[in-house]
Length: 436
Image 1 (cartoon, rainbow, N blue to C red):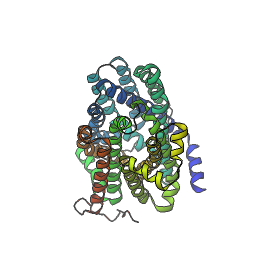
Image 2 (image 1 turned 135 degrees about the vertical axis):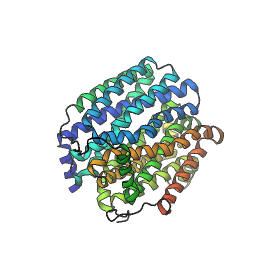
Image 3 (image 1 turned 90 degrees about the horizontal axis):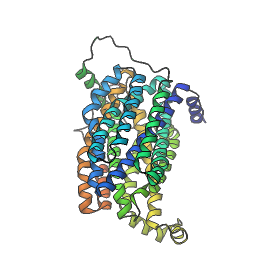
Image 4 (image 1 turned 90 degrees about the vertical axis):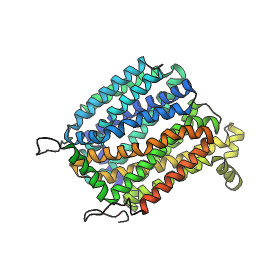
């Protein structure tokens, strides 16, 4: 009951509620755009290599800009950063409407779109502690992620999937443009976001960036949370790249119909957001992150072995899969994939909510922007080489084998970082151990 009461109090917080609504509008627009571009590029080129290039173009600015953007966000008015960010992204979407048939321009505009996001995302995350109490951070992060997922469902399942079938990519971009303008207007109504006061006259960028890195290096909870979240995000991008080919080769359906598998994953994610706050209170935030990561990797392995999982279920467990195939006409492999997608989404949600709550709890108010930016930069830097290779390797070994190899590699890396002294942070007196 305590968790429910706290969540109600959060939703009664008008500035926080407006931040949620702004995030919903922006996320719906962003996911509609990315889904439409992914389908558009695959249909234009017929190759998963180009979908890889699209994802890399979206990730590359984070490697170059995330750290300076994070430092800048700590010193700039966060509401102004979010307002300008939404307006700039609206302008880029307007350019996509004009250049939607030119793959080269699409890549350039995606680079610009993601570059703006490097300032927007840490500003949004860093604004949260100004609007809610410390004891509310887990619930607030859960609600932020809940809205993120609702925006993803709205953008991909409703806006993009529907408009792509009836009018192509341009109507998707037009709607997304309106969503970003709406998000910008809502941000102007948010009050109460604090800007940390600074005594120094000039910003020492290198020192400020080093301070963010030192927190990661000396706090084991933060270090491992960022490691697990970064690996999970990389594996999620691998799944996005392989999804169109997976639907064709494994499920034997059109790439546009991948949404029917994405929808159960979204349902699982929403369930994870509801479960995360009480589960955090029961077992602790760090354990939620670790549990979610393990379940997420197991879910990816399940997708890689989906045919064998289907055969095992049909022989030993009665889940009604054969009934669905016989009476509804949906392939048992599709049904099994949809079933696996639910816990996969739930696990990814647990990792995201838990890891971001730890960062909010452990980072001082004046360092929130750079810590979130450092996490973003590390995640995208770590994912760059795998993303460049995954499309080409999938062409050679197949989608299921590639997905299975990626999941096992991610699990092995997480285990190594957890037990290796070489990469273990040097604990300080204030740094708490994950198990505590």
